Structure formats: C-alpha cells, structure tokens
Amino acid sequence: MSEPTSSYEAAGVSIERGERATAMMRDAVEATHGPQVVSYPNGFAGLYALSSSYADPVLASSIDGVGTKVFVAKALGRYASIGEDIVNHCANDVLATGARPLLFLDYVASGKLEPGSVAEVVRGTAEACGALGVALVGGETAEMPGLYGEGDFDVVGACVGACERTEVVTGERVRAGDAVIGLPSSGLHTNGYTLARKVLEDAGVSYEHRPEGFERTIGEAYLAPHRAYAREVLALRDAVEVRGMAHITGGGLPGNLPRALSGLG
Image (cartoon, rainbow, N blue to C red):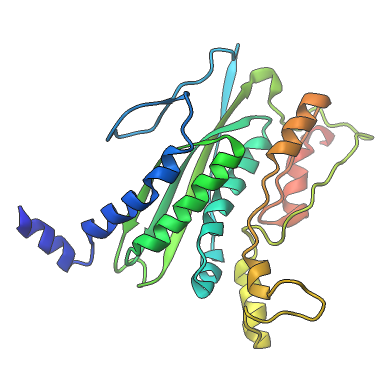
C-alpha cells in the first residue's frame, strides 16, 4: 500500500501534511458544535438539525472568498484574520436576507500545504463562528501543485442560515421616507485588495509603514478582519420592521445599495 502513497508524494501532494493540518484544527472546529450538530464521525457531509420552532422555515445560503487579501496575509505571515474574514463576509450576506446564520463550511486550497498556516486560518474561522453562534460543520483542505504556486493559497467559505418565510427581507416593501441606517466597516473588509496593493506598490510603500498620526501599520490596517454585523442586525430586526438590507462588498455603495431598494422601482 505504500507505493501509491509515495507516487502521490512524488506528484507533490502530501497526505501526511493534510492529516497533520486536520489534527491541528480539530479541537477548534469541534468547539463550535452545539446540540444542533448531528454526530456523524468520518461522514461525507455535515449534519445540522433545524429547530422545530420554525413554522415555515426558509434557508438562506451564501458562498464567497477573501480574494487577493490572502497576499497581504502571506506577506505578513498572519493567517487567522483571513479565517475570520470569510465567516463574517458570508454571514453578513445571509443576514441581509433577514435570516440568522447557523452553519458554515470552509475551503482552503494551496500549491503546497503548510499545516501550521492552514490550521491558523481554520482556527480563525472557528473563532469567528463561535462568536456568532455558528457551527463549523465541515470543510476541505486541497493541495494542488501546478494550479497554485508554492506559498499561494485561496480561502472560500459557505454559510447557511434560516428564518421564517414572513421574515425574509427583499427590499420590496421599501418606501420613500423610510429611515436609512449605516453601520461602519472596519476597513476594506474583503474587497478592493488588488487595487489597494497596487497603490502601495506604485508608491513604493511597504506594509510595515506606519503613516504619521496612525496607530497601526498599513499592513495591520489592511488585515483588519471583516466586521460582523449580526448583533446589530438581529437586534434591529427584533425591534422594528426592517424592509431592506445591503451588505456593502464589491461594487461599494453604488453596486449594492440599489439591491436593497427594489420597492422604489
């Protein structure tokens, strides 16, 4: 049985590195599991029991990646915030529908798997899931030499939430005169990094540079985790009728706010 393994190793894929990464992240992942997670050891999918309190449940799902922000994490050797980014990004998308985020799955792909770095990403993912009360029910770690260069990697996540059908927020009830509430971001979140990195490169400025009057370096500001809005949004939803919501991501305000205003035509 050793020959196929050695052949796989010769092709650049290490089963041992994958198993080591899994072992390093296991405790953090399992810490996010509550009673809704159905035990399925070594299963082919994550199982989650939806609460029987829902009368007419609707599921909301979102999948996204952190884009070229991974290059900033790689340059600084700091990976946990990337895991937080992908959870909060996807969870915010789910929140914008009126649903409460419930479960999450992640995907980390690389040219050569570095167990410590991958485990750091997933521990960041688990920490963000725990803060939101979201279960990290599954994931995939892929090593693909030839597709990704050595040291290159990508991080993707998918979030699923639920709400009553009557709680779905589509923007169709938005009317002129409704109040508009904006919640601040923590920085660039997970969009615009290709341009942001090019601006630094063209200016000859490093991530270690600390502009006068700033408490953080540019690298630290660039790596600030995508902010989670669950606490504010869920509290607002419980207090008033929320008619439209937009998660401001790629495209900024012009590209996203109109998506929450369908009631205005």
